Image (cartoon, rainbow, N blue to C red):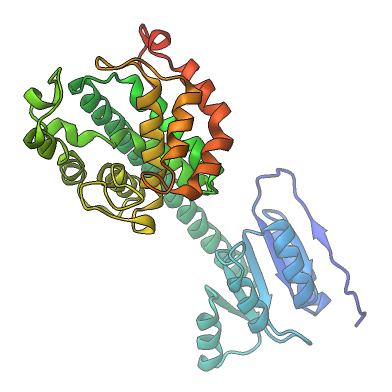
Length: 361
């Protein structure tokens, strides 16, 4: 046998035909399988395990017919390596072998094979087994596609509910609905600069609208009071993170989990003097620390009945001065780096720009 066994391939008309990788060190067996299957399938063949693994990675076959008894690397080892590779693990493997003892079959199934065909190969049996397992694979793919579609639909539904609830909280408050739009973008941009991965940034962006959902539970006489709040009113106002966490509830779903954490912790302070639990330093979840900066930045740079809008420079200076007390000092470099983008978001989603449009994240 040559050091580099040749690799053959046949292709029938129609690129959609399933691809079958046939692995056998005997040319006669390869020729037989090819003659039986080439009319309905694309065929690639390999005479050794190393070549089979290389072809599997490059071409991702729909099914593999794998000889057991091969020199250097037997079929069991090839199968083990296939199943250890996440890219290849789902490809059905049918062992083709002259061994027919029950322990041999058990070992093959334990390695992850889906079937056994014994030699000498019966063409009708080969055709039916290949057809059956490819049909099962197609069915499995269809089910996976439906699950992915349904999961996406559920995620989008949750997302819309979260956004609508966030809007509801803003309409009840004296602040405007555009606050949640800007604040969500601010949190996303700061999170990106702080090194959060894409999935975390996406969750942060979509969960941020729920940060003040607990204000739904605050009486209007307090929430809408035009003057300063007294001590008892402030005590009630400070309950809105707990109310928000209770509204959202505890869930294993990442989006709802992030929403609850942000609602619960965005008023905690780095030095432990925040509320509702007086968490300190790294005990405050990172997403809560990011949301706190985003929330305050928008509050400072937006007009309120009791104050005018600060300039971006003044707001940034205020946040910098409270690094280490109110805010996580290690997030301030990310805030500074994101600041030019934050200013663009502020202009893009200004109150007057959104006056005649539905607010969308």
